[in-house]
Image: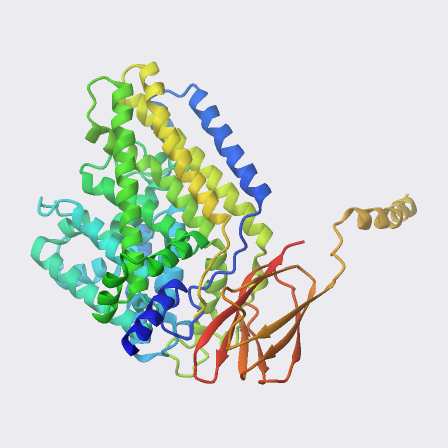
Length: 475
Length: 118
């Protein structure tokens, strides 16, 4: 009887999607669901733009002309900036470890989770997409490694383990971000950063830094992808160029399927983050908790000490990613069938994968805008007292979060504009890629029908999620 | 000329004022909430108000609770068996969870306060 009771309690906890009571308000979002008129206007704009772009007379080579070289900055300035960025990266890395290990236990009173999740993962990633990618210079693992071994920066990557390790590591990281409680606890977070550092440096020692960077480093790769979307970047010749957002994603296709899977995993991760806060996900958990067929399995897992909610999210994330990958493969198969000209499905998958990235970037921005502006404020008092020792370095110790900095209406406008823009860029990129891949114009246009439908489906999902009330158990 | 400009400006002011969006008249929104066992029924209800409203929660509970409105970061101590009024000026738009902390250190989601923008 007692056992049955505790099992019921576990399942009830799963149904209410409540984690263990940890007093935090770290991942809390206060966004209102998108109202119906915003939702409909966004949807209409997306459909109209899709047809307008498909009808526009783009040419295969148009993408190559969409960039303007910038003057090369003086050598000393480049060196100075690179040195400063490297120093800043290492400083923040040490600060995360020191604050995580020595500072407060509360996620909102410790600067480590704020730096990692808000400033770096949300803020710097968005900056990489909207301005340019600063991560290669900031990357503390790379900087410290080069300082330690004094090897030249450029060294050819060796073929070793393909491109899948980065995809697997990104999945683990996404699970940590979305499902696990460890990411928010300062101690656990610092220990995880230490463990990851040890792993990364060991891998660099075994296969070489360049191989690690090319095949396994998930952060280099995701920042690199977001940076290729940015208006500021480097072209194939390494020249600094200004370009319209997204144009940098044209050409230079992923060489292996692992990289294609990585792009779809990015899309699945940002989508699942929103999805796991909708009433639909809560209903799915309810169904799981009440299902008779699954009950013995859930009881056994819970008795074995598995956190059922984190496990459900891991399965949900994995299924979303697999679903996206299979859908994409199917659509590429159809595209090849309609486009003809002896193109294989694998070739099409590599050619079109990056076209989907703008949809992920747009959703990342729309989803996190208010979070960045609100949770980002936690850094203001913490910057004055990073280790929780009662310091007041910058005189900002007493700053309290002001939730009035951005209103719900502004968030709605920015979200809809971001989603519609991301979709328009995605459709344009796929269009240009199709014209380059298939010789005949007519076949290229025909081949785009399934691709456009898939993009419409992804964008409609983004809008739909934004129109759902956020169901989140406050800790 | 200068006087005309000033006169025109003074005359134009009320017109401009009329064109600008006016803040909605604050209305009082009363909700009666009987908390049993640290919760309100089976699922957390959503209370909908407009920005600028004054929200009045008429609260009663069968146990001592500390209520916490996230985002606004307001707290309210509610004693068992003695009904109380909690007035909240809804000055920020958004969807904010209100949760109850009991003596044992547990916390439960009570309701969402949705403040729609003007």
